[in-house]
Amino acid sequence: MGRVRFITGDYAAAADLHERALCLFEELGDRHGQANGLNNVGRVRYVTGDYTAAADLHERALSLFEELGDRHGQANGRIHLGRQRFAIGDFEGAITLHRQALAICDEIGNRHGKANALHELGRAQYATAKHAEAAALYERALQIFQEVGDPQGEAEVWNSLGILQTATNTPQHGLSAHHKALTLARQAHSPIDEAIALEGAARSRMLAGDFEGCMADLRLAVRIYDRIGAAASKLDEGRTSR
Image 1 (cartoon, helix red, strand yellow):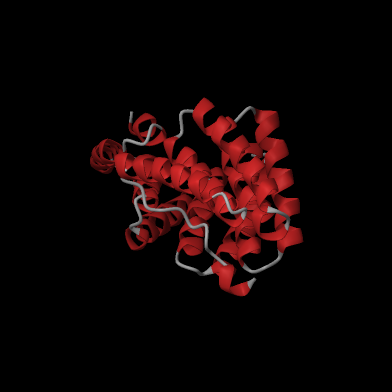
Image 2 (cartoon, helix red, strand yellow):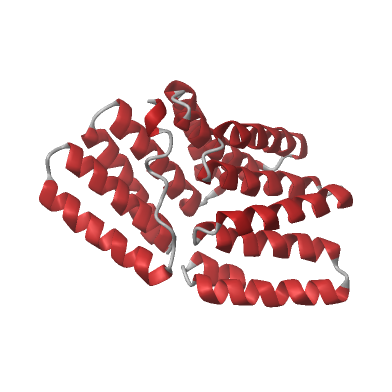
């Protein structure tokens, strides 16, 4: 139930449900359930901008997965923790964690986890001005998400490609990528990805001189962010290094 609430952007309800589940797992002494519960609560804290709490929760989850020898959990734990490192500007730390996660996913044949790790590694590489490397990682992630049938994952990658295209190609190329992300986000009923797509599209429109369109997209994005209580996206990460 908490995961459903999270996907639909009801983060307050998701946090409550995940915390209640975590308490039950702790009462039962179910360490695997506790690890998953910690990651679930951490995801809510991350998306609502509480990165300190998210880091603590994901580190505790990863420790449990390490103790349990759960390779799938170890990979996901590193991806979650890498996202948190990225959010606070520790790009090298994020790169290390995502490379570790990618190696584990290859080892155990976890294609969905591999796609997430590739995408997140690409974001960190982009933030350190390694644009060609980022583009190649995005393309690999996008192909896997398409193959496994995950439109929400595709939307995330198209948003990242939009940011890259706006910075390195033309605003029109970036806008096209964000529009693809917007269509997929709405198909997947993912309001956070919809808001990020609108915000990215607004940036592309602004750089192209379409200020009226820019403001229209920003108003829609802000409306969604306010409704779901999510923190603003990290579109400016790495800008000082470019």
